[in-house]
Image 1 (tube, rainbow, N blue to C red):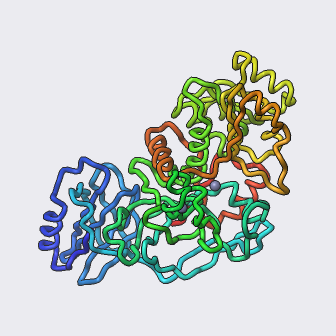
Image 2 (image 1 turned 30 degrees about the horizontal axis):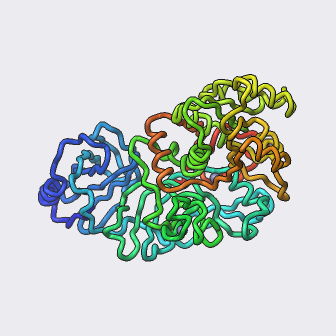
Image 3 (image 1 turned 90 degrees about the vertical axis):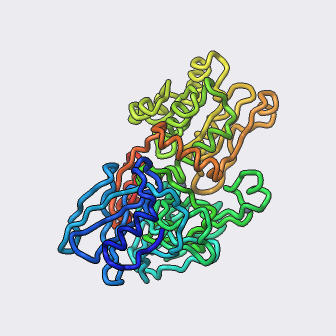
Length: 463
Ligand SMILES: [Zn+2]
Ligand SMILES: [Zn+2]
């Protein structure tokens, strides 16, 4: 992306045409928007990979920001701006998207952030914070959307005893961020991430890429990862720093609100299903199949990986779980452990399921899960129990040996899996039930979440 020189519309336009190659707008990626106005000496363009974008106009050597306008596939749009003129924008496919020399878009000195002002309770305050400078290897992302995950609530309430540090006042939570790269750190001009690229930020915001877990594709347990949102402020804010080599490029064709939940819920469940080692056509039980994680796991398992899914949850979730592709739904309130185990044996031809994915944070679900497995089956632990640590009550060495059962933990997923889950989402194999809420509604959202009144997944609009 290159800035214009402000030499008048004619010169600017012809220069742009030369740069853009003036190709037919056939591709939705690497698009350049060219905007001409009804005023002389005013033109601008912008490269976009997003479903919304900013136009900037170069007027008498001064850049003017125009608010984001919706980008449609019509490649031509007319938008009345805050200025007393009308411009038309035409989008062109740029053959050489990488020829970028600019390293910064508009970056304010300060921006809005949501902080946990009283950790241990549900309370969020909107404050202004300094917008940080990206360092070497980093980019500054203008976040437009962030998912709200159940673990954010747990972190704010200090419910996870297993985390290295308690949550401190002033911490910025959030780990499902989507936004546009607005500034490159020093030396990043040739990195794979360009200005204007749409990217995602995950729970593990940084993985070194060089330690043994990273080399084995287990970025989620990188030895030098930075999941600590205190040192590494999260995505409940308008700008965040992220490593250029660890942000996740978001494919065009997927809206930012749909992409946000993929950064944690999608990635976590997809990776867990992969780790279960179940084969297509085999039975997989999803515990908590109607929850934020579970309804995504059910779809990925059923539509993306061709498993036969048995979904377990409260009766009120039956319709949702079946819509998500579960072949069988079991209402948790209608069975005790013994009858539930028997029911699963009956459904699976007397054997049991090949895998159980525990998406709830309930210790009881973990204890039940092992009993649902057939010989050689795997239980994958995904939902992080809150409160004091409890062992999995039924993990008896004797039965695990005779049945060759496996219990596996799964922390998030790796970079490759992040792009695979986005690919499934783009192809419509997984659709999150998303509610888009305003930035200042986060406390309310957490309250609803805490009371179990949350349906689907909340994504905050940070614009
Ligand atoms: Zn999460
Ligand atoms: Zn590492």
